[in-house]
Length: 288
Image (cartoon, rainbow, N blue to C red; front, side, top):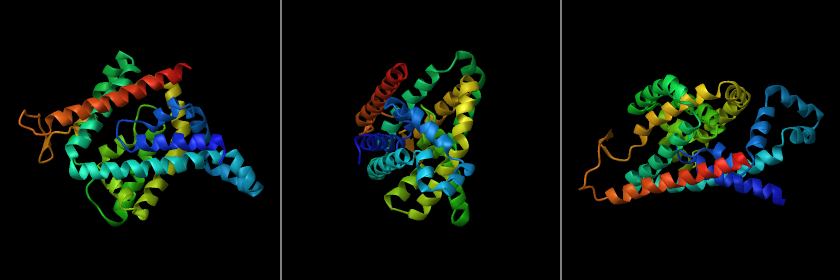
């Protein structure tokens, strides 16, 4: 493995860690580590017609699609996702309030980071509807528990939407899974090595990447401010879904009698600090 390929693999590892947690965008990690343009450009080359290059031989197909880069990145991301998923499954099973408090801090600052990129006009015009939509979605229970083919379609659709969010800096793919009520089931599938569910999710993600990469690039280039305004509101509304203090799944205010109050507040601050560090690194990378 060359140094360059190893470096891409390590970047993928960091992106995998990030995408396992709502609030941190894998796209942001790609931007911070200097591979975002290559990533989006490489994904944009993937289209059904481009597979016709296989007639010219595997080498031509491989080089045209920059598959050395994609495979190295994918291996790193898979390792990062597996490691972080194991940790999150354990914490969510034993101390859910602590896990959600850290994720709430991440998401809170990530929302502020997107808001800072948005103009006040669009925050008002589209941020408010986005906030309302986020609150409505977050106050629900997500997609209903289903089995069989309906479950497969839910995972496929969730993967498609999550991948679309994944390549936008500042928007987390895991955040989309939280909104859909698929975050815990997907973590469980990773933990249990449920290859059937993971294959369907991966297929949805592949479709999402191929369909969205060019569209998102065009949309962000021509309608960036309206998109950011709506996404800011949506993310703000979705914070209700991550609120760590709950009684029978209903969000409540913390009390002084809560034995985990200090730890929960501390992890919220820690999550916010981690997101602030990533946002600062992202701004520095964008300027350089």
